[in-house]
Length: 488
Image 1 (cartoon, rainbow, N blue to C red):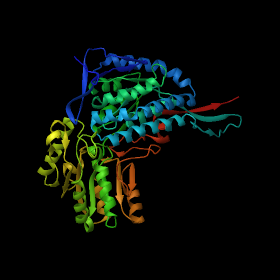
Image 2: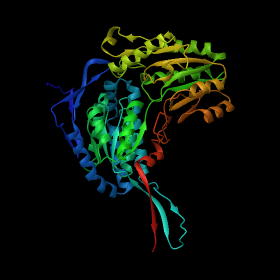
Image 3: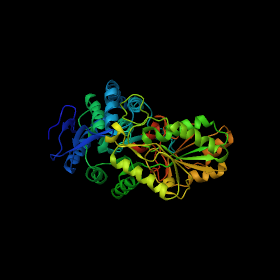
Image 4: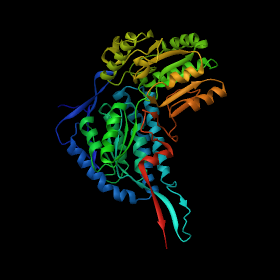
């Protein structure tokens, strides 16, 4: 295979070295904005490669855990500096590889820098408490023990932020890591891994193995020396991860799908609500687990809201995310585009009214990419597929309701419970929403997408395994409490 300098070969990172896979096979990563543009090639690894990585991580974990939290934090500070120095380069790679616009990619990469620095600081925070004992001569306290080796399985939609918000807490609390990135974003992941390598972490502390979910992902699930698995992806795959981990007694953390609503009450600031609905639902081409999918609007303002929404969506410029003034990039792959188109077709078949968009864009330079029109349905009822299933694309479903009580019933009538937002000026409506909304993240007068890095993140119902990521809450997954009783 002839590979140009631009179409670089990226290797696995195992035991502190960049190594080829055990078989002479690579996977290409192509630009969804231009399918003829090959971003790079990554290893098509086999179980043998994973076994090497796990053995390396297991060996390294003992000495890594013996370092002080402050010493481990110094390594994370170094990684943060490396990532910051290469921010534009890595963001450009992200845009080429999975399609989100360059400004969004830069924002995500900057967030990765901030997450690393936040968890570097965790190395100096408390990990336990002193407890009173019934024995007056004894001393009792709690501390935290790392899980050991942690498998990190990440999706393609946030190829910098999601791996880092799993890897950073895993490392600071004394674990070692095996990263299995999504193949669609593995080049970006490799560039992030270069930052860890350049920071000089001890051999084996962090490893990356690229390959298929059926081999490397399943291998992580089944491996007896992987003590914990943290996964972000679809609910179907997440359940397989959970079942496999449960069978062998490994700890697991699952962040899965969402069908996130925004409720627009009669007293809402309509301009604010429209802007947030578009940003929450259509940025990143709707490919966020927290993206707004259902727009539940009270009838008194429904027509005005719909008119303003359509008017502003028509102004969205779709194109290559590296081009100036492009607001929305392509779907991340042809498969994802076809999935979205299939949902649009299903919505029409089931009786929803397609009021804007719904087609693949193929004019001019868009012909070689996987571009989708931003799409708006109305007359959507809760029994419809597009009201129940996660589409993961730029599709908004308008749903008209009479009362806030009805809006909350509609919003909660799905299997997911990740994020939700409401627009209202009424404190009473705000409190009702906070108390009655079945979602792990609720936002008032703000879009459904996004959470601050120092805050716990996770869903209810079938959106997660009910643990929380990010912030200090991360310690609950990546460690176990150890109670210590000392008697002279």
